[in-house]
Image 1 (cartoon, one colour):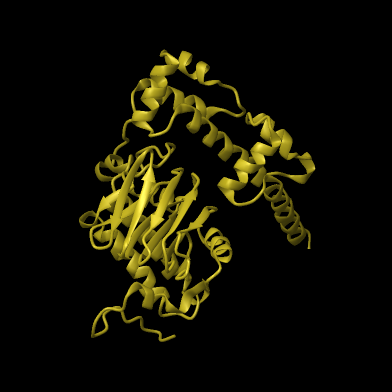
Image 2: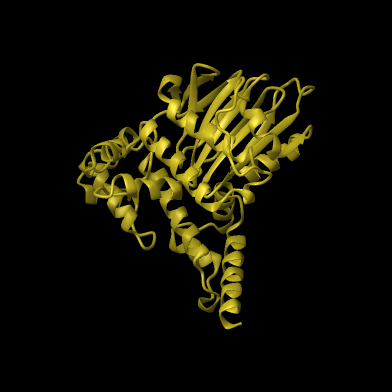
Length: 357
């Protein structure tokens, strides 16, 4: 690797696929292998291949670190997949060839190369169809990275609300800064043999730049706060704000939807409609999602000395059926809750061993 990074070489600009040519993660004709590989890099999902599977050839190249990643993805034929709500990152999908059909909340959006791109918010489930010739350049920024930059851009505001982006379809003219940040990541990483070779200060600057581009270049519910430097209003009308505050303050599964409506001073139906207008989900979905996230964090922070059990954590957060809790947890986080608990205990053991050694 040369000590000088040349970002302005003469001649035509290399494609995103070329920039990431040294970061191939998998190239397979097996749909099952592709499904596993894609889930490992991004999120659990269910892959379905179109009726003509003869051209199936899944290729993914990926590079990134410190919460910011870029991908080049192609499938070789028509594919469909369902991605459940995933709270860990925001993703921007920019087709360079072909088109994507994004189904969200009963509507179908066509994301075409040279015309538009797709934004997938944290916590947003989505169904997608990729055209046979589609090739996609994608940027992923982890939520922790976005919130870190949000605290820098809007220190006087509040950062306790769920982050939601407009979309999923966004006109290409509004995405120049995001595409530029993604291409910068690909350009820099493409000049190193591996992501581990990139100096850490460079990695941190790239991640911060990507998060800044996302927060300044896309429409979201914190935009007023970021652009004007002051606290924005809580989401939606007073009844929604009250319900969100009650849910966020829970230390166990305390409230029913009827309780939330009563304490917000409205009927259950009114609360339902207000949530769908302001939060784009029902109060039940929001409540279950927040409780699952709290159960996840509790398992991650478990101490073996406390004899934490998955069933106890599930019950505390209102998940009375262990099997359904485990299935939903795995769908969201990609592992079983018992695996998260084991990993937390193992990490704590290793940490204590180092301290005692």
